Length: 611
Ligand code: AGP
Image (cartoon, rainbow, N blue to C red):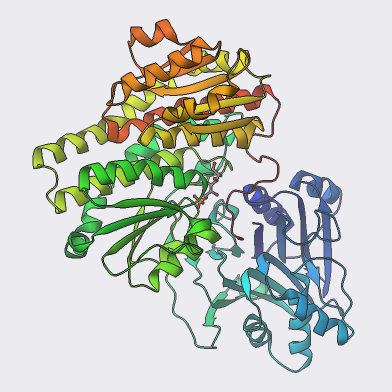
């Protein structure tokens, strides 16, 4: 996944491009570049490394161009290097392009272009695009038509932004399976992968849809920034558009004094869950009551952390709604298609709404007439436009690659949906419904209590910062918590960690246990409490270390475990929301003590928009 930005203004744009790229750095950060148009020629810099390396390159240079495009990369084709950094240019240096996505048929296109004597500067898939546009321009097509012809020849996913030396006030953007949003300011217009890139300048946005092309023009300096915005689809048909107002502000996308976005976002969880639970989701579901009453099967589909939210929900859905429910990995779904029909409810869960495997699963499911619903954190993302209904999480922008507040917000929305489904199908009483909803409303305060465990969790991280392995165990819906805890530890501290069903320890993993092997166990006062106590006794009997996430005041656990992180008493349906917080903090403090990158872990990107 990469970050792209374009800007036309009535003043130099290089600073705004750089600022925008910094706010997109969570999308990719192994190389970066930008180009502006000055006196009819392109002036550009690009480099391997982070945006701060690009900034150093620009130091001392004056870029006066009032139109430009920029890019921060997460490599998919071609190693992170200066020559593979975007932007790319046509042979005659009249066209520049930046791209987010993958051109799947780039190889045959490149062969065709080489036969036509085009010269390539990089190993990337993107570069074929700019040479194709060059050919159509030379054949007499106008820029938007040239771009349209090229879009029809590309397979895969792309958000593209073009600039032209012969059209000094024109940017053209196009998207397929990759986000692209227009920002309309008073003095400038933007095209970017995501809203934070230009939120400092404007909150007026137009979300482009798949298979749309936008031409953004800014009249010259003299005409006081008169702007025009023209959208067509890949068939050339003019498209209407809606200007919406972004609801959150730029501070939400900034660290605001925290050492890392991850810690800020962990701390934001009570507020994120409060906003999410208080939003009238149930009224959004109202018009679909009949359809929801008729379903006879639920399939939850997602990837990574979002899939853990699905797994935790499966238990609650089956228990309260009494309906067969499965949690299927997005990357598995379409290769092992489950039975689907119009009585199946497919719930796709995604923070970004751009995860390729989750999108592909929804598209495959919709071919069978299912009722599709999304739980998503990004308004206007691709997923939200492909389903029948979206329930938004109101976590605000989640910048850190490691998902935290989006996860607990997803669990909250899914709990609300579960309660609603049970009420519609009368599998719970009104009294039970009120009790469960009240529990959700009390959650933010209980989460604040759990967040007060930071000191003991940091001490625990200090004690085990050198171990090579962690085991995480849980049962029922807190098996998902075990998986999530292990994922957090892996992805930001780079320490191996494994989530496992606690009941499975005797069937093999117990052989791993010795004095240097910590096991994090979720042991709450619930229906499997006694079983969990037996599991940690087995571990202790073999000299293992136990870090227990337990119910506040549980003296029994304090006598058995080496470390106890206390959480308030909570109903089972919401316990994974509270139990997630110690998992997040343990991974965070371990990673900090190991000097890891935290917000941008190696090899990872915030949203996996490629398969
Ligand atoms: C979680 O910490 C990871 N960043 C990753 O597993 C993530 O949850 C997964 O890629 C799904 O992303 P999505 O929610 O945007 O679809």
